Structure formats: structure tokens, C-alpha cells
Amino acid sequence: MEAAGPPAGIVRSMARQAVVLSYRLGGTDGVSVEAHKWEWALGEFGFRTRRVAGELCGAPHPDDLALPGLSIEPPAGVAADTGALTAAPISWAPRTSASFP
Image (cartoon, rainbow, N blue to C red; front, side, top):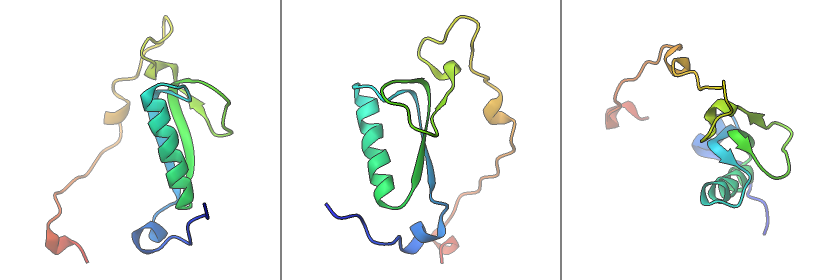
């Protein structure tokens, strides 16, 4: 299969980085297999991907980031920071069809 051509449209204007985030990646379970497909597909569009998970299985990737607090069963004494996502202000407003160019 040939690689996709240069990105066009909205993809060209976006930062070509993506993070695949899950409690476990790199294994043979359904979530890991589907995540691997997304990594491949995003790579075909010119994206660089990074895996972030509570548990990383299989061969490591250079940019892997293991966060044990994301695991289904985190190690003793490790817990997810439940306030991490509320630390940064998030501004959201619904978009109407008039908002799009």
C-alpha cells in the first residue's frame, strides 16, 4: 500500500501530533488492537503519535509515557489525580453553522 499524499484542508492546518490514551496499550485486547489501528491510520495522514497509558505492553515506542494511576488496577499507593483535568480553565461555546467559514 502506498503512503497517503500530503495532508490537505483542515488536516494540513492542524498540529500533526496525536496522543493515544488508554488504561492499557500494546497488548492483544480489543482496545489495544483498535488503538494500534488508529496509530497506523494517523501515521498515514502524517501525524506523529504518542502512547500514554497506565500499562504499556509489548515493544516500547520512543515516546511512550506510562502513568500507573491510569491502570485498571493501579499499584498500591498510586492513584489518579482527579483534579488534574480541572486545573486548566476550559472555555467552550457551542458552534453554529454560521461559525464555520
